Each structure stands twice: as structure tokens, then as C-alpha cells.
Image 1 (tube, one colour):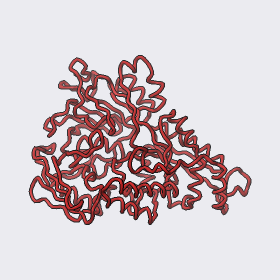
Image 2 (cartoon, helix red, strand yellow; image 1 turned 90 degrees about the horizontal axis):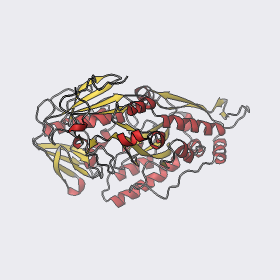
Image 3 (spheres, rainbow, N blue to C red; image 1 turned 60 degrees about the vertical axis):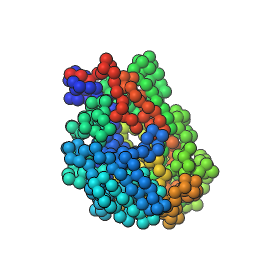
Image 4 (tube, rainbow, N blue to C red; image 1 turned 90 degrees about the vertical axis):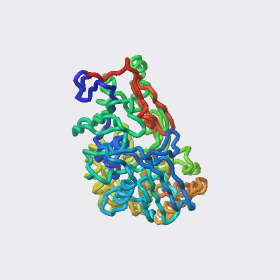
Length: 509
């Protein structure tokens, strides 16, 4: 559907609106459960953590105005801001931090983030504005873990009626259509300049681009084709500003280790060797990306430059598959073993044409080595809830948005395989577990990096994922928005300071 500016439900007398599109509807706006990008994006405007990252990915204060890391990392003392109120007017205090911590460590809370707080021995609140967190052992991601959104102790947790301390207040949520947020006039850092923020749910990438062309949305993540060709017009150049920078993410194929097809390392390695990753980057990303070699990004301390990209080698792929017992015994062009064809379904999500195109290229390459693959494209929430969480999948092509901290506990540790947690491929490796735990106890970055370099080697060799590519982040934003500051963290870090000159304001009654 198209919103007309004169009758839009989010028109406003007092200021402009920022309208963007999301391919998926949030699954939950409560920070503990906001595990998908759509949920996290909106939740971050409603809730605050004790700390946050600035544009250069340095940790800075949020609800905590300052802190001390003491006793070699065993103790963090947070000093909270005293001018913060919940969006219902109640004061924010240390009791809310304690309440959030209790929820995170409660085994009955289905959160993927609980692992960040397992090392906490105790949390004390000596007064309303001091929080002391004591760890059983030094924990290097400890400070960054407190970027988790803090919850109000005095209210029930309601995903569709969340109350936070953040710069925006959820005012309306029309399922399948849009979420409307209003600026929090009492926000402790000052009222945001943009009066309304609207997230329209547009599952189709082409439809979202048409809405951008019609100026019905102000901001959109672009596909490489859109960025390079479809926006290279006088209209787009005069109306929008385009940004590109290395994304803090990677694309991958994850294999379900509970499926016997993928329990054999030789099979996983063969699947990776049969994929022409450079072909995907050239054809799908139009060259705007790099081949991924593991879960760490080039340019970061955790990245091991000695790990080479796996080559495109279908001959070696066939040899490994034969070694694992997969041969074309009935001469039908497909491999089989003990009377069963090597056939499975590769899942991905609706609304991302690049992933669908990558699946089609991979399907063809796997067919060339005798593997029969079907592609199924599913709506995002269905994919998560009915297939990923219930382990009803064989292989998936997805991507991870990464934290600046290189900790891999949530994604690859064997303890994080329960429904709703991030190790949904059920990967288990004792050395990987040990190294992940070791990396969480080391503070000097150069010493910690050595652990992650070894993890990089193992995960490349074991191939629980076939690591495909590190894309570029590509965006277009309407020129009427001022104050946009691109940085290593992207362009949304200072969103509350974006503004529109009076004569440029658009959404007025």
C-alpha cells in the first residue's frame, strides 16, 4: 500500500517524520528477545543499555555516565545517570538493572543473550544510582555486554506495548503494515529532532524500491544493482544521498548437524569446494564484497590473514564426496548412498533477492557435482519460528550482523543450541568451546587475538558454515535530512541529532 503525504496516519503538525522500510516485521521489541535485525533495529530506539558504541565503535556511556573496571576485570562499578525516567514517568534506578539481570540469568527466559551474563557472580545495588557487577573470573566482553537494553522493574514485559527509557515511544503497531514511534520529549539526552519514526513492513525488495522512487520512504538499504545502476539517474542524484561502507556482517550457509548428511566433515568441505564464491560476489553483489574465510571480518584484530579462502574445486569436491561414500550408483546424475539420494532443501528468506540469486547459483554448482538441491524461500518470521527454532531444516543461507566484540560464544558454543538460541546448526566441538571460553578471559587485545586466530583456522577447516562473502552496506537517504555522520559503526549512531530545515519539512497536516 502507498501512504499519501496529506492523509498519512503519521502526519504531524510539530515536525517531520523519518520513514524507512523493513523486509520483516519485528518478532519482539523486548531487548532480551530481539534476536532478529528488524526487532533489534526498533528496540534500540525504545530502550537503552548502560553503555553503547559511538561512531568509531568505542564504548561510551548510555544509562551509565561513567564506570570503573577494577581488580583486573573481576569488578565493574557503574555510576548511573540521575536524570533518566521511563517513558511512563517513573524514575530509572539501579533496581531496574538488577531486575534485567535476574531475567537474563533465569533459565526459563528464552533469550539468546544469557551467555553474556553466565560469568557474573553477583550484582549489587548499594544505592539507587550505583551498580556493582562482580565476575567469577575476568570476562573480556563484560563491559560491552551491558549494552543490553535495560527493562523496567515496575511493569510487565509486553512486546507490543514496550516502555523503555529511549528516545522514541511506540505509539502504533499495525500488524503487517507499519510501526509508528514518536519522539520522547523527556529523553535524557534531549528530545530528538525528528518527531516521528515509521517502519513500514515491505517484504518485497522491488516494491520497497518503488516506494523510494515515489519518495514514500526516506531511507532504504539498496541491492548492488539498485546502488550501481537503478539510482544512477538525475532524480536520485538530486533527491538522495548514497552511502557505502564495509558491512559488519557476513553471508553463510549453515548446515544442520542433526541431519546425517552433514555430520561428515568431508561432505561439508566438499559442499564448500563446489561453490564458486567469487562468482557470487561478481554476479550477485556486482563486485561489492569480499570472499569470507570465517566468522571474523578483514581489518579486525580477530581476523586471521593466514586463513586462505577455500578454492572453487569441483574435482576435489567429488573426490571427497566419493571418499565419504557418495557415488552415482544408478547413473541418474545424482549421488546416492545406501539407496538414498543426496537431496536436500536450502532455505532462505523472502525479501532479499541477493540471497535468492546466491541460492540459485549454488544450486547449479552443487548440481554439477551430483547433489540434488531444492530452494525454498520463506517469510522471515515463519523461517525463524517454524524452521530454525524447531530445527526443521537441512541447510539455510542467511547472514549475521556482528557485534564489535569478537566473542563467538552465542553462535558456536555447544551450550547455545536450545530453541531461540543462535547455535541453531547444533555445532559441537570441544576445542572450539575451550578456545571461546579462553578468549572471554583475556584482556590485552593482542593476546586475545591469538585465540581468535586459532578459532578462525578451526572453523574454516571444520566448516560448520560455508562462509560465503562479506558484503558492502549500501544505503540511500533523502537529502532533506541533515546531521548524518557516517562512521565505522554506520550512519545511525547519532540518529537523534538528525534534523530537517523548516522549509524542507515534508510530513505536515
